[in-house]
Image (cartoon, rainbow, N blue to C red; front, side, top):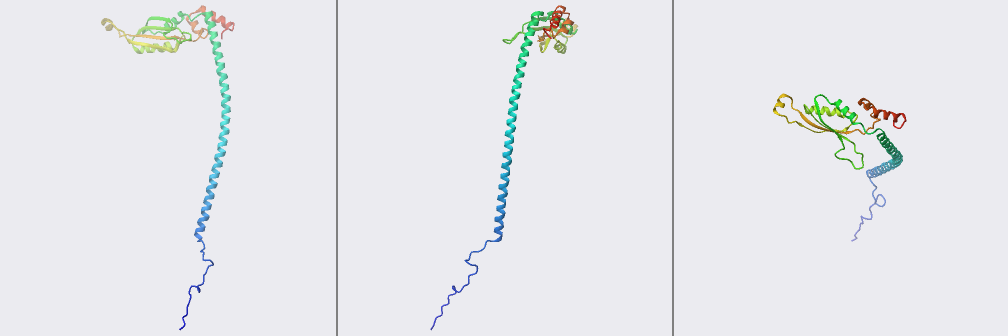
Length: 239
């Protein structure tokens, strides 16, 4: 008997070359999209980096310009400060010369000014001009006026303080009430009148010189001092 061997494997026909499958079209599209997105992202980052670089350079230039202007302004400010110090020294020397020639502000002019400012409801019982209780070392001691008196109410004392602060002979910033308290009275006194309030007021004299206070000195009748100041003005020693 004959046996027929049939090899079905050798008889198969292979289609498509070496058998490798082609890439799907969808996968290729995703690849192209991913590449485009990456390129766009790189372009955006590169553009933003370029913008920041340009902005940084502009800010550096602006900073350099401002630094230069600051240096110029500082020099000008130093010059102004120096001139102000020179003017202050000249003013101090002028005040010293004026004080040496015409003397201090006359007490009678100060008293007259305070008297004219004192209302009828305020009684002055004590008046004194002297050195301040505390003085700054190295600084000229400015005389202080101390007033004691009585008024019909605390409001009257406050109103009187405002009148004193308006005086050209006193420094308004250093004129203040030290104390206000009801004045002890006998029963007969209390029954016959309104209760009184005792007060003390302290005020520093003004730092202005006699030439600056000439109108007030003329009103106060300080004839001799006024004539000496006018003589200095005539000779251009003071303004």
